[in-house]
Length: 343
Image 1: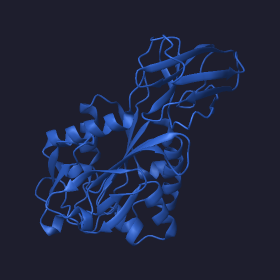
Image 2: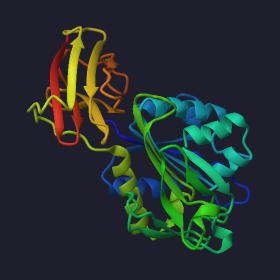
Image 3: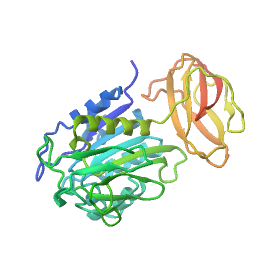
């Protein structure tokens, strides 16, 4: 069976001043399942202890609900684990109404830097909506949340009252994807931001969607499922069709070398991406087309980039001897090269 692509992490531990039923994985899991993704779920303690490894998954959905200062949105240890995940090309969906309040307003300098560099956010206000009387948000046109609007729970819709949702704005290349209805965005901030690209100088492109309302509080169900479907589509990115071996104009993409080939421990793949306008992907598949490794590539001004593959599947198991294919893809462009693993 294939490994699930998505991991749901429940980091919502708070019990005072909220209605925490500890089962919000249900709303997240149902919506992910509706989008035909397999998922695993764990609590944040399993991630901290190392029982669960984030980099075994492409996408992590981290639930923070109303997690705030007393119970800490992201501890120092969680921050360091998430930094590694995002810098190595991981995709993070995080939602919670107190993340900015905790990390930016009440946090120390490392917390504030993590919020800015890895959650790509600037915190403006602690109750942009909610107790101000607004429990509705609308997607920003021209973004992947275009044309969608939904409500979030005021305490009478089965989860908890989102009475203090943070107002947030994006920093450095991130974009606002959701705004609160009837709230002045300029002074109070919005409800969601998104980013695709390298985190903190990493050449590997990761992804982020951050909502300042807990995803589980969105209603009705169909809207919640639609929001998740769009987030997963945004974070998962396009992938080249398997078996399409026609090499297109080499001006756009180039796999310049694979060495040593055959290899038995580690192979170095050198490649170039010349066009900066869209995301590019480096994928390794076996001869049957099974995806073993997939990285999104940050195009770097036609510089030669290098990826070393250690002959392991993403779950840490050794790949068997055989012929493998390196594929470099961008939009409808694709170049492929075969190589051999000999144990």
